Amino acid sequence: MNGLRGINGFQLFWWVILPYLALATFVIGHVWRYRYDQFGWTSRSTQLQEQRLLKWGSPVFHYGTFAAIAGHVIGILIPERWTHDIGIPENAYRWFSASAGTLAAVLVIGGVAVLAARRLFVARVRATTSAVDWVALILLAIVIVLGIAETVGVGLLGGGYDYRQSVSLWFRGLFAGNPDATAIAHAPLIYQVHATAAWAVIAVWPFSRLVHAWSYPVWYLWRPFVVYRSRVASRPNEPGTSGRRWRRIGVRY
Ligand code: HEM
Image (cartoon, rainbow, N blue to C red; front, side):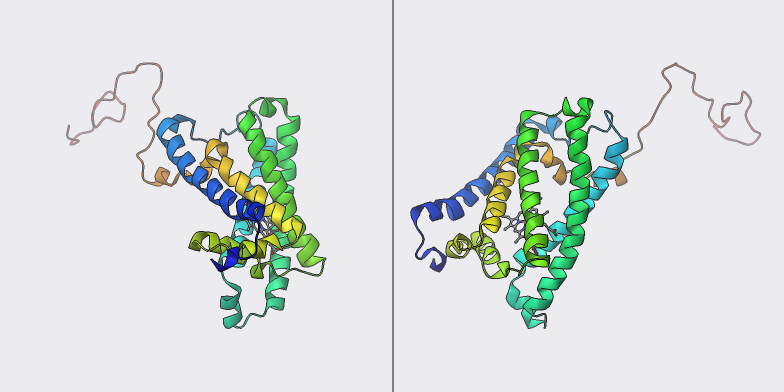
């Protein structure tokens, strides 16, 4: 394990053991929640309490987040060597990530502002917010604000930082069983706190309303129609009469 050379016990705990604990909690927590709380497996939507702000805040936040997730795949999961080999130099990558990332950041922060204001100031929505929701939302807010500070503050307006040589190596290494803890231990503090808060989000994920992310209702496309019936009992139509009392000539039963 080359990536563990020269690190102390605290760094080993923080950058290797904690992430694995968070991942284990994520996996086991989902299995547990699925087995014991399928009826509670929901986004706990507050659309019935308030619609006007939700209608704008939610799509803007989610589309911005999807763009940011795509950015993580490109910047964290895809090795810098690969983009270099297809002729994209670090400088070009940096400008792409700073500009596309800033666009995503505008959407995420716009959506978050609406959703956070709604949750804090609309009493009916606030009343539905549980303790674990508050924990997940505060952690998410920390991760988002720091992530945007990295993209806009460091990438766009600052001198830039090649996190693909440190943060990304460590992150991918965790899944290959060879995490480069030395690399993340020497990254700027803002990247370290962003990643740490992200692990905390991952650990609370299965116990919060974030589980709704895995339940996009695609089965709606194939399931049978929901049949609505009047509450007042009525006699069914005689077959072939479409409700009239007489039957068209030639229509069979
Ligand atoms: C340990 C896991 C994670 C790592 C290593 C990581 C790393 C990073 C890095 C390096 C950036 C800067 C990208 C750039 O400047 O081009 C960033 C941005 C960001 N991160 Fe993360 N991140 C992680 C998890 C998360 C999670 C769980 C969220 C949750 C929502 C998140 C939200 C964001 C946001 C919103 C940005 C700004 C993106 C943009 O403006 O396009 N990150 N992250």
